[in-house]
Length: 111
Image 1 (cartoon, rainbow, N blue to C red):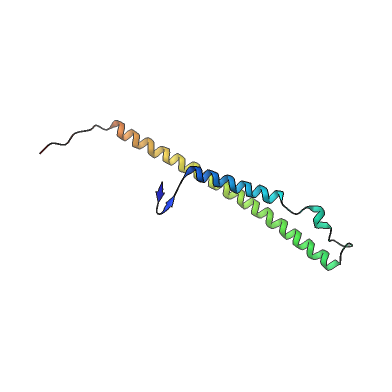
Image 2: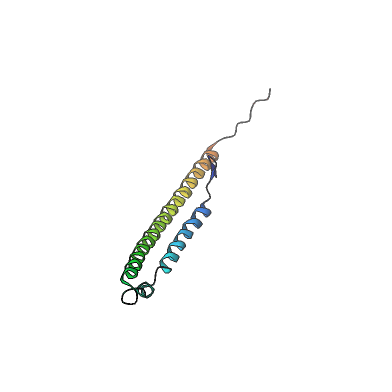
């Protein structure tokens, strides 16, 4: 269905929701490993380097968690939108089918 230059396809909406969930999962799997984050900590490195690495690791972990949560929320919203679209389309089709089934064809008069 096309509306105002935009096209809606339930399969595409559903597929996009799954892709967002997959990206969120990959972000969670690729988060900074705890051991890798502590290798540059004092006394293995200078205190300033240790603090910078710790700040970066904390910030990156927070951002990664926030992004995964956002993608999951968007996926849920997109899935909900797809379901609502499908329900609306089914209701519209049922109303149209009911109208056509209950209508009576009356041929036009010939002139």
